[in-house]
Length: 276
Image 1 (cartoon, rainbow, N blue to C red):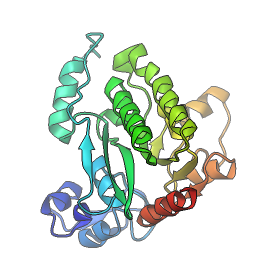
Image 2: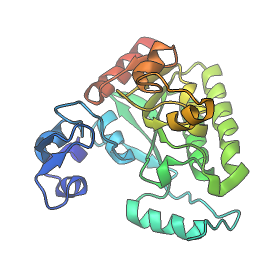
Image 3: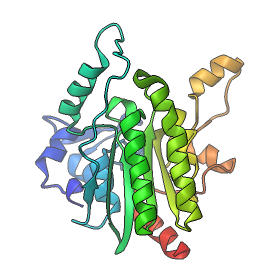
Image 4: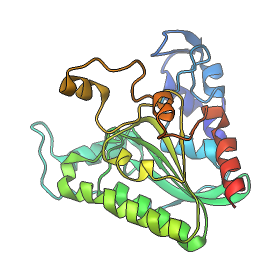
């Protein structure tokens, strides 16, 4: 897992510039950077799972050197000449691509997982909150269709605030497009595993995120459509403790398995093995 290799100076610098200590945003505990990295960016004290990028996720799940990226050249367009009062959407896209070194909020490809060929899509919250626009929907749809053609399982790792408002109805139609592709994949007899990470909300949670044959979530991931603050303000009631967190959602039947990040590859491998 090269991205979690201590010798990867770029990775260490990305986590904590000019410091050898990582401070947890959840419990404020400090831990050595090397221990934090080797623990897959999970706090050694409170077990808080920090966000990781799409490429780090691929490295975590897939066998070493097996990943082949697909659809990397697809780029979103500014259909609406969208201006938010400060910047045009087209300029926002260009800036974010340069900063995050990725073309959009999902990375797709194929590889092997403990020797089994899979097609995979990993969303990246760092790119405009993991929002789903035309390119995200298209890349995920193509990944599902390729999995159907190649007769392989498909894995989608979700991390999103929802549909991308800058693309209007074009972003919303991706919900139906991805869902239809998954239905065809299911009819062909192949397994789809959805992995919910923090957060999985909005149009993503209302489409492909909740359509998995198996739905796996990371501990304490926020899973829902609207956020808890919006819901609480709307119904004018205090919400139960842990509302919309993975554990709460599992108790209410919407998540099958909660898997620690260090166990995720083995969890996915077992699910694929027992459904093959």
